Length: 168
Length: 295
Image (cartoon, rainbow over all chains, first blue to last red; front, side, top):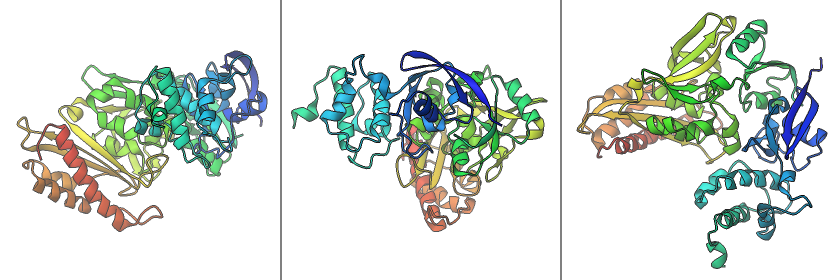
């Protein structure tokens, strides 16, 4: 017997109302009902991080989150990071500049985790950043470029010089 | 879509108890990081779920009047390891749960779920065993508190009574348990992230005021048996002894009498025995250091 529920929440700054199947994951609803296809379906068991989104500022694997739990929450996906005319945010640009992308499948999830990290406005060590990024699998880049992109943006936002670039 | 047959949602503990009584076949879902994975794998396919995710009263850490540390069952690992009371009184618990899965899993997973699923590898469990935690259960006849050692019945089965409509509402750590006590946890796994412990070792010590004698030592393991367990003989062997490398060595060897690990695809029994001794030694050394002792 199908069971539906009216969901009210904010997605990328917009108040929305949507009838959802209680069996749906948040990934299902974001992709199918809102066409937010940056939210990737990877492993769907919380191992790979490709479906990561921010819920009230915290990064979750949306595949392990029932859509109905999003009632009253503020959800941010990669689409919500760009400016009104599609301008890329600093962290997105840093991923391009540092060649932290190859196939791109892990990228939206990683950028959402990076968004959560950068919102702390804290200076993290490389080891801390590695740990904070450890909930994502990337099969192309070997992670170093991703780490560099996040670190570069962190330093920029804190107004600190980027030593890695200075040393070449 | 998840293959669930019905979803019942509780906003209060009373509602959860009512739903448990009305739907005895339904499984409780908290953070979802275990139940939804099992559902995806087919183990829980077609199950009905009672979601307690919405009971915000069960989130957070507080100090009761008698000094008991109260951890709401829906407190997530991230919130737990960052909480000032945990950092002040039992930092090892925060450090232990900071090793669960990865960051997104720690944002979702709860300490209640970590204990109620009854698995021996839970990163919180060995530390809760080592600190004599109490589990608070609320059902139709009110609240009862059971020592965590009694809460675990066998692998995957805990003392959560469906006929009473019970849900776990808190984990409690009495003052006597954490006062002047310092501990350390080692998760031995193949990877640093997104892995399940091959062995979890949690040790804590209380030294005499002059830091020369072991007044109390508590040692607990995950994955050294079907459920987490305490190393009673090893603890007894070091209690009252002088703080010395010899005492630490003998105690570490004694854990072999307490543990009952098995061969699994993750590691052999012999390997688990080997690392149990080594992890106990390292945990003891680190705990003594944290307690201000000298080894």
